[in-house]
Image 1 (spheres, rainbow over the protein chains, first blue to last red):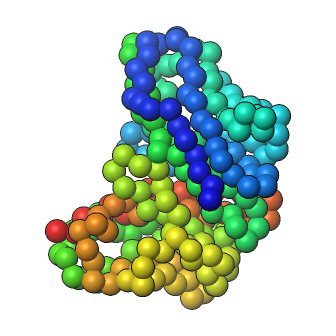
Image 2 (image 1 turned 30 degrees about the vertical axis):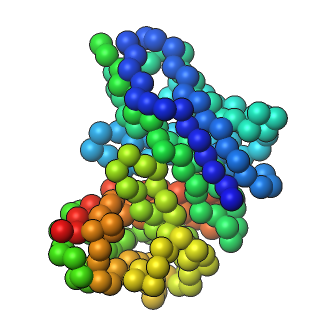
Length: 113
Length: 115
């Protein structure tokens, strides 16, 4: 079956540090890939997505590139802020009848001032 | 506009009791999903509705769990004979149909505690 593997956390960084959060997946066919974020006290919200190989999703300074050859979708940001402290989830999904999302375990990011 | 809403936000019940969790999707969204999130884990899929019908219920863990969406809008997740292992946050999400339907919008969740 489909699965998503995220690097172990938590991750603690100083403000303005570079961020990489690894995500790899196992799936049949051609899924779309997503990063969701959960800020403290809030619900899950979509951060970015990519729908086909070599696509780059970007939002709020975050980027991730859909790499089919390495089955990866690593999340990066050049300079993190305290406000980026949250839990980040990598997920995959398809359109149509099988449109459920398969999530990774999530990773907690804490950014120190 | 209003997002996905879920009620109650918290529910405490005793083992063996019946509970209902409600989800109000974004107006006009035909697809509705239920997920369950245990502590320290990512959300796990339970069931997906397209309109009034359950298009995929493969994630329901057993026959104690049931969900309905009779008018294609509000959905209710029903859990019979609750067990302590059912304690989790139950998330609802909705989306438009078709390609745009890939973006799922999540509600704040219902935190269920079974004592």
